Image (tube, rainbow, N blue to C red; front, side, top):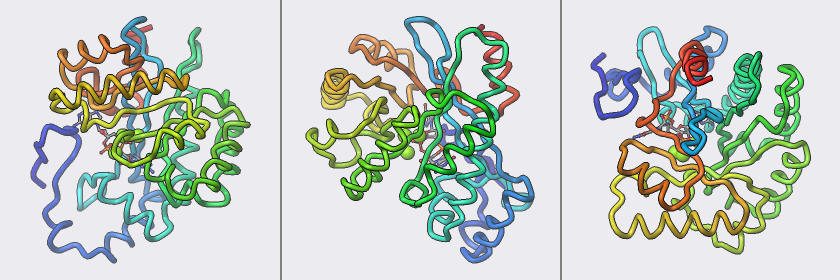
Length: 276
Ligand code: C2E
Ligand code: MG
Ligand code: MG
Ligand code: MG
């Protein structure tokens, strides 16, 4: 495999056989066995509060390391997992693993940190979501407020009545809710204010180039989020100047390669020890 050097994660490997030779059916079959073969791993990307200089949490980002495909990007296999329904058992595994890892982070820590878990469309709409979330929390014996679920704006827009009901049920259990990739969908501000969302994650496309239009949009998004009492996280912060601008417009928390890419649990634990 050739290393995929597009400025993204250095753990990623581009596999030409996946794009050309590997059929989708074969890929599906391999994915079906990925959990039991322990080919899936959660990596963690720290979320930073610059004002206090602390790591306040991390986002769980799944990695599939296949013996012959090499590294497969979640952008490629999550859609397949969604189509085949594999996302349901996989999502349960992700929730359980993330909660177990969180428990370890907070052992012997005075100030607890949180874990964010991405929930895709089918997983969110599945009738057992609440049960599997509660199960993961109970198994790991963690405080539910320290589990943050990220749904994208497109999921949130799916069917307002159903989505709001589901979010309220999760909120009632004390779980923290975040809206991911914000700004890429078309949700109205009227709708946004009806959602019991705690955290707004500004999509990295607004942070990337930060031209005049982007800076204006970002500043406005932050003001709106704050007026709705939401915490704002900037995704994809890569440079000092991006960070400086975002701090200037009162963005609360930051995530991006400027601080760290997603790293394995052991490395994240080391990072936590340094920052303690
Ligand atoms: P996302 O939830 O919006 O995650 C952010 C993505 O941006 C991650 O890509 C992360 O590695 C990348 N990123 C973080 N900082 C930077 C930066 O400074 N610059 C750039 N260019 N990229 C940055 P990743 O890990 O490849 O994940 C892609 C998407 O796959 C995620 O987008 C999420 O939608 C999905 N995904 C990842 N893990 C899971 C999971 O466990 N469950 C579900 N359902 N979806 C997941
Ligand atoms: Mg996310
Ligand atoms: Mg995102
Ligand atoms: Mg995304």
